Structure formats: structure tokens, C-alpha cells
Amino acid sequence: MTKRLNLSGQLEISRLVYGMWRVADDSDTSPAHVQAKIEACLDQGITTIDQADIYGDYGAEAVMGAALKAAPGLRDRLEIVTKCDIIAPIGKYSERRVKYYDTSAAHVTAAVEASLANMATDRIDLLLIHRPDPLMDHHDTGAALDALVASGKVRAVGVSNFKLNDWTLLQSAMKTPLCTNQVEASVLHSAPFIDGDIAWMQERGIHPMAWSPLGGGSLFGAEGAKVRAVLERVGAEQGVDTTAVAVAWLLAHPVGIAPVMGTNNLDRIRAISDAERVQIDRETWFEILTAARGQEVP
Ligand SMILES: NC(=O)c1ccc[n+]([C@@H]2O[C@H](COP(=O)([O-])OP(=O)(O)OC[C@H]3O[C@@H](n4cnc5c(N)ncnc54)[C@H](OP(=O)(O)O)[C@@H]3O)[C@@H](O)[C@H]2O)c1
Image: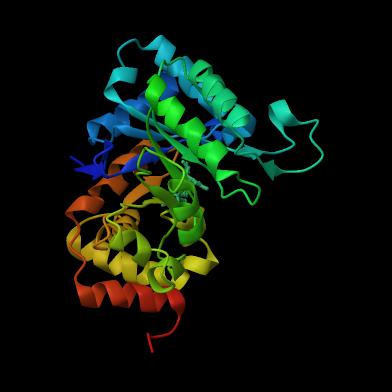
């Protein structure tokens, strides 16, 4: 069973998180099948589901909402994460001329109302600002986030893809502590471990969430071939799947990462969940890093 992770005293989530970016890409989007995916997660102790208003051309939240409506009681067993601020010329915004970000209080507040309705729920456990917005008025955005928490519609707030400066700017205008930063990190995207992006979170006791922990599937293509050989060997030694080793590599970092897996395959949900019983010692961690980068550390 996956462990729990306390996000800055604001919210407890499961250490492994299930992401629904791809839920609408599945050939089966029926409430029964989505419910089966959620139940497969719950069987592993994965109680935290990651969403965003934009997923599935602004349709993924409603796909999940239909499943929650069909299974009363299911919602109360979950922590629901969702995100807002990306406006792309698709789905309900198809008339827009260009993709852009909107962190205005009016947009963030309206986006939360839409997400609540789409997911047939009265609260969002964790709301993330999806991407840093160069036009963010931090007082306006911060006040909106504080008000959403005060209203009870949102239990905790965080950000995604933020650099340190974006974080400190927004936090400076808020009463509520930001509790996480969801960033890309994997064996194929190891830069954050080297360039300081993980270091500032570690210094502040922030547990990041890691999106695309399997490189969005590219671990299984040409790009992943060299590191896959090492992951396969470690997996064979410890009796787990390659995917579990890739996720365990993230779990081994002392910052305390919550990887967000995105498979639509029920068997893979189970296989990836073995990550928490994989042992990655320091030498193996660097062996995986070296294979992924194609060169040893300096
Ligand atoms: N905050 C952000 O900006 C942001 C950006 C991107 C994603 N996210 C979040 O992160 C979540 C995970 O992202 P992700 O879906 O890219 O994660 P991922 O777990 O790295 O990749 C999932 C993809 O890998 C494939 N895959 C997994 N195991 C495989 C195997 N053994 N062989 C071949 N293919 C395999 C899956 O296909 P199958 O379905 O066939 O298993 C799926 O297409 C998303 O759902 C979303 O919640 C956040």
C-alpha cells in the first residue's frame, strides 16, 4: 500500500498519484471503466487523482465526474487535484486566437466553479496554478486563492511548473501557504535535480509532485533504450516491472516526491505501484542517471 505524504501541513495525499491527462484518450471512457481505474488505484492505496480543466480538450474532468456520479461514496475516498489558467483554442475555447494563461481572480474563480460542476463535487482538495503567467498580478491571484480556501471550495493550493521567483512572488501576496509545485521530473528529465529546481523546494520543505514519471511513455521508445536496460536489470533483480524502478528512482530522492503516473492500463497501475518496495542505493541511482544521460557525472 502506498504511503501518505503531508504537503506543508495543508493536505495529506497518497505518495503515488494517478493522473487523468489521458483519460479521454482511452477507447473506453464509460463511467464503469473510469470507476475501475479509480478502484485499481484505491486497491494500491492511491487516493489522489490529478486533473486539470484543460485535460481532454476541457472534457476530462467531466469524464471523471460521470464516474463519481455513478458511484456514490467514491468521491469521499479521494483527494482531487485540479489546475487552471491555461486557455487553449480547443474545446470550449476553440474560438480563441492563441494559447495563453489567465491567472486573474475572475478567471481562477470561474474556473474553480466550472471544475466543481464538471467533477460533480462541492470541493477541490488541491488547486494548482497550472503554468506561471507572465502577466500575473500576484495580489489579484493571491487574494482569489485565499478566498477560495476561506470559502471551503478549495482545501489547499499550490502551483505547477513554477520557478523559485514565480513561487516567492505569488506566496508574498497570500495568507495560505502554497503546498506543492508539480514539475516534470523523470529519469529522462533529470535536469531539475541538477539545476537547483529541486534544491529550493528541498530547502523549504516542499514536496514536489512529478509529472510524466515515465517520460510520458518515451522511456519505451528509442530515447529510453539505454536507461531501460539498467532499469530492466534492477527490476529483474528485485522482481518488479521496469516502470516501478523508474518511479522508485524518483521516490529515492530525499526531497520527498509524489510521482503522478498517467497509464490508462489497469495492470500497469498495479505494476507501477510496486515502486515503493524497490531499493535504490546511491550507486544504482547514479547508474540510472548515467545511463539516461549517456555520460558519467563530471
Ligand atoms: N502539471 C503539468 O504541467 C503536467 C503536464 C503533463 C502531465 N501532468 C500530469 O502527469 C500525469 C502523468 O503524465 P503522463 O501520462 O505523461 O505520465 P507517464 O506515466 O510518464 O506516461 C504515461 C504514458 O506512458 C505509457 N506507458 C506506461 N508504461 C508503459 C509501458 N510499459 N510500455 C509502453 N508505454 C507505457 C502509457 O501508456 P498506457 O496508457 O498504454 O499504459 C502512457 O501513454 C498526467 O496524467 C497529468 O495528471 C501534468
